[in-house]
Image (cartoon, rainbow, N blue to C red):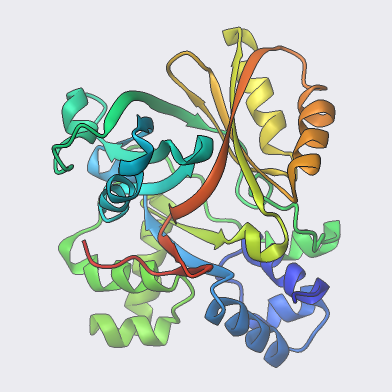
Length: 331
């Protein structure tokens, strides 16, 4: 079981993924050694992973939200094929197991078949496909991630974690170079890899590692994410809300939803719906409460539909196997 200290550590990491264990311990009310031990236990048990992710825009890629309706007896092999693709960052089964929802990285001007169907088994398993462009993610780092698990921090604690934020990226994002590959591979495995270890892996000095990390982060090419497994934290129902409203309401509604504790992600999209929002709740009654109170109180929403996820296969930079978050296998 996970207690309030564990939850405060998770919350601290969401605000500052590479914060020192000393600072995390001070925020969580424990020693530096206890914070490090608790963090390692959470990571070892597959409850969470801190990962460094390259912004897909540096390679000219956009994010496409894809829903694939297929024959129930063919869902598993198709979903497994999608999970293995490095250009796909999220895969989940929904609608009783007959729908696959995934997030694909591909150029904005890519032909439809190139976005999804290349490299997939040529089988009559796909009944219908919808592919829509993710236009804009809502919220800000530290305040828009899923936080329904508790571990709330005071305003002073948040201020300590968010002191000296990285500068807002300006201009076009500069892509990493081939020299950056060992650095980025190590951060994809563990976003908290120390400067000392990164120096060993790259053959650089620690000062050069620090300078390069600063350049990648400040340009917007590299960001950090905290992958959580909500089921292990007592939130077993995951649902995607597909919402429709007039364009004048999209930004306000999206920002409000992104601030809800229940919401793990909210973004504007093309297609029949304007916004998708992913919610984590304890059970069906908890989701019903969220839908009929918090979502219902947001003005401007004209219509909605819900996809309830029955199985999560991949998220951000992690696979889900045996109830644990694990690093992805080589492509």
